[in-house]
Structure formats: structure tokens, C-alpha cells
Image 1 (cartoon, protein in one colour):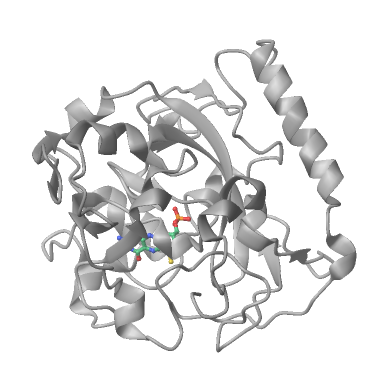
Image 2 (tube, rainbow, N blue to C red):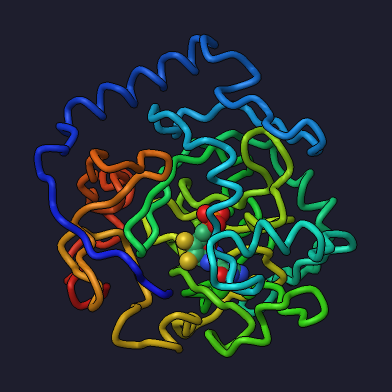
Length: 317
Ligand code: MTE
């Protein structure tokens, strides 16, 4: 993506590991004790939006969610333009989310085409508050509503040859004015290794803030992979294909020296156009606002580091 920020490092901002581990334990016990209540931490923000509640998840971060108006207006969805406000300006008026089908095929025993309304009922909805870190060096905390992608994957039964999953998103020039620009080779494609796609943190999201996903955030369904840079979280999915070979994602295709396949959040590997060591949290702008240190795997290392045991993360960036 078009990176505009250069960064400086503020190591003093590092939250000691023990502190965030304790916070996470607190959330887990609060959820277990029912203290967070069935409605979760995030009331709906747009009275007109259809609601989509989810059961609070113990995998949520305790950090305060980024204000709803920022999450829904500062967006990357290049199919609707490359400026941050373009998706919120164009997508709600143009993107039609019904009828909507998602083809699930490739190396699976049970290939299927799902109607979005059947996908919504496939598994219980959870509210997962996740940090999302963009390669442009900003981050947000978002209460997503969805269920683990693994719920869907299990139902189509990947074959022994399935090693990767390729995600393709809608590319309709009638609805998406951004497709006129050659900034990417459309449609937008992303990929994960099968074990990454099956990981319990990998979410198929249908909502945020207790509401059905706003168009600009990837309605009617998107991926959320919290330990990877934001671009892996593909929006408005239309196809999920299981493959033997590693898929080529859109960003790798457009700039192979800048974007790799894995794209795990890693403060130790710079992007060619800027350091990834720190980040700006949306909503914390201002002359004196401090940058936060970026954490390896976006702070989800204790859940996901084992996926990459023995791999050289500088080579497989
Ligand atoms: N999905 C599609 N189809 N098109 C895009 O341009 N941008 C990606 C990702 N998914 C993008 C996409 C990038 S760069 C980021 S940072 C996240 O969406 C942003 O999600 P948000 O706008 O909901 O914060």
C-alpha cells in the first residue's frame, strides 16, 4: 500500500509482558464469571444499522476499542479509492451485499457455494476485540463479531493436498469505482497457510461494534488475522480456495520487494519505505501523542509463535 509515514522509536512505551498477560487473565476470568455480561463491551454505535451481537470472547484484548467513527471512516479498501475517507464515502451507497455467495472449493472433499445468510448461521457469533496493525504504521482496536474461520474449513473437509488457502474478494466495476485505477491487479487476493487459517484467532467477521459490518469495513464478510499486517484481512470475500501451492497475494504481485507472503507483524523487519518498530494508535493523534512500540506478532506471540518455529522471520517476511 501507499505508505506515507516515517517512524521514530519510543522504547519506553513498551508494556511489560507480565502486565498484559495479567490483563488477559483478568478478561478470561471476568468472562468465565459472567462479569462482562451477554452484551459484551461494545454497544451499537449507529442506531440505523442492523444489530449483530456476539458472545464476549476470552481471546479479546482488554485495551479500549478505537472510537467507532474512526474505525468506520479511516479505512483501506482500494476498490473504493485510495484515500482513507473514500471507502466510507462510496461503499455504503454502492456495495450491494444481497444476494451474496461465497464459493469454497479447490482441495476439499465437500466443495460448496454458501449463501451469506447460511454462513451467518453456520456457527455461534462471538465478539472478539482485536488489535489490528497496518503496515502504514497505524493501529486500531476493534470489537469484531464473527466466528473462527476453522468452523467453515472443517465443514468442507480439506484433502491431504490442501496446504494453503487463497481468499478472493469482490471485483465489480459497476459497484467499485476504484477498479478503474491500476494500483492493484484486481481482484484483491490474499493467502494463508492452512494451519494459519485454522488457527483459533483467525476470524471470519460479519460485524463490528455489535452491528452488521459497514460496507467500508468489508461487508458482508471479511477475514481478520490479528497477528498479521492489516492487508492480510481481506474484505468482501467471494471465494475461498484450498491449494497445494502458495498463493500469490495482490501486494506481493504489485511490489514483490516490499511485501512477502507471511506479513506477520514484526518490529524487527523494516518495510523498505519505513521502520515497523513503532505505531500510532488511531484516535491518539496530536502534537504530544506518543507512538507505541510495535510488538512481535502484534502481541499475539504466545498464541501464534509456534506456527513459525525454526523459520527465519527475516527471510519469510
Ligand atoms: N480488502 C480489500 N478487498 N481491499 C483492500 O484494499 N485493504 C487491506 C485490508 N483488506 C483492503 C482489504 C488493508 S491495507 C487494511 S489495513 C485493512 O483491510 C483495513 O481494514 P479497515 O479499513 O476495516 O481498518
